[in-house]
Length: 104
Image 1 (cartoon, rainbow, N blue to C red):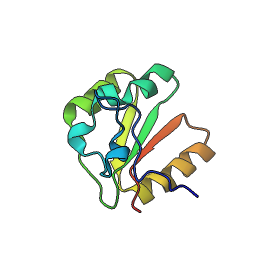
Image 2: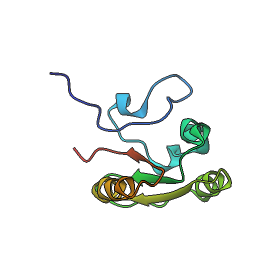
Image 3: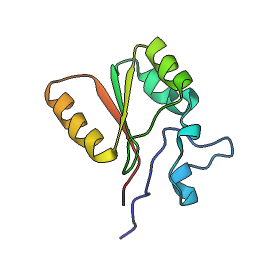
Image 4: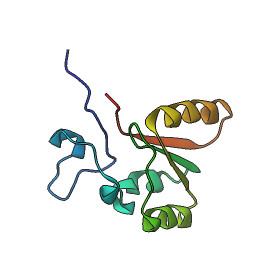
């Protein structure tokens, strides 16, 4: 059975490769507004949870501001917390999405 990638990204890099295919998790420097364009384009997401692996990370201010300008509140946390929070918000029928880095 094939293994799932260790991380996922909304969009490939400029060369068409997903960060998960390189064998490394995407860093916060790679977390750009362009990577989250599909989430913004949906138009129905109010909260975006970012699971940053084993430890919480700090997002680039430009990403946080850009998503906020699109009406999306972004919250970065460790991946386990992001999964738990996603389930709670979904049960509350909130418009939530999650981008998760595996902790494998």
